[in-house]
Image (cartoon, rainbow, N blue to C red; front, top):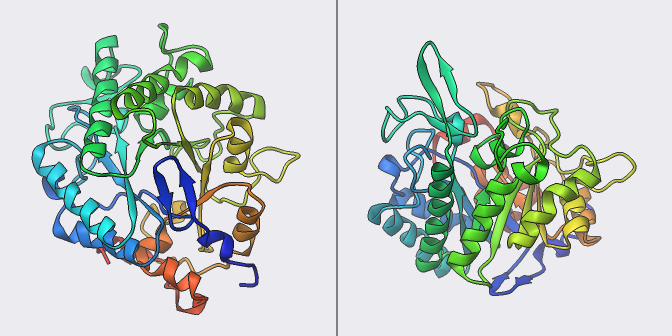
Length: 369
């Protein structure tokens, strides 16, 4: 490490959101919430990151109140008295150590499989029907279904504000429901939600508008999106800056305050002819603050650890990241796996103890350290 770490520890202000530094904990599914309810173990997990210097904790994906929202076991819900009471404990614990926290609100869409909790008879919901061997695997959403899901996101955001969350993040990335509407391959509808990029973005825009109405004019809304999908790492939703602008402007105008720009590797330029990454381009186009993310602090990318492997991601210097942040390419930096394995990552970076930062392996996913 030779670059100046001070830009990472400058404060950040956006309306009522005041962060001590530019470090964000990236949302990462952990599967430690039986029946959708965060436990005391989950409370301690988030508290440890906040007390060690993370400026903003974004929680793992939490499901909105829709029968098909969940796709995985032991994923936390963001609805129902018991689950919200569990999240209130998380909020209070994070605030007690000086941190800030936002839930990531999530609907998995057509990724859901029959047999998934809490009601295994419910198929996935998505832009289009999918029927195989006479069985409906995915229910193509009607206008009423769309309205129901829009209101489920709005209700979750309102509840987040009510229990003291400092912001909310909408999960519009990685091939889940909101993202499924963005892509021509997964959205071939012939109504106002399909066809042009404007129409394919309409569902997300309606969610952002409904959330804005539910939480008021000043409450921060973060929107996470990706150019790639888990099913296709080379895909590009917007292959040119002009198309990226067409995609982003309606979301920005609808009420997004911060864009969380998911990349596999934060250092990769998004378009030829410019060194700007996705967060840099998004900031340039919208004028809104952005969060960069993608293999921060590690020498192996997340996707290498999606399957069983003995690989270990060793600590990587963040000189390039600090230089980009110092130049104002983006505003905030999300750290994922490095914070799963080492809750003291931010503290160690601030103190220059880079040799003490722990490497990451899949073993870290088995516990809430």
